[in-house]
Length: 156
Image (cartoon, rainbow, N blue to C red):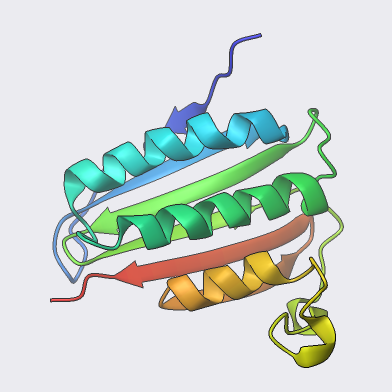
């Protein structure tokens, strides 16, 4: 079965205070196999636009972790559910918003994977990576799941 991604460019793009930008709204089915082609496509755009030149790998790793969490932990790999992704890129930053259709969770209850008692645990490493690689990471519980906002700024 071929993978399809929904790409919707919202109504007229306006100038942002930091300059021109592109804003996309995308979605993918909650299947692990959909993550890599989706990330490859979005990272190709981010790389071509040079929004965070030299920091693309950080964004890519954080994006893969965030989508894996949304698909596996949020939507429990239910192919009937979607993961929604908003991406806004401009001359000096890229912001990504990811929302799943799961039960939601409290990000404050995720144990620190660097604490001695958690070093051998496999939980919490994705969130730790996102927070380490991105400049801003915020989780919000919403009515129909969890929403994550990540931002990476261009270092000049």
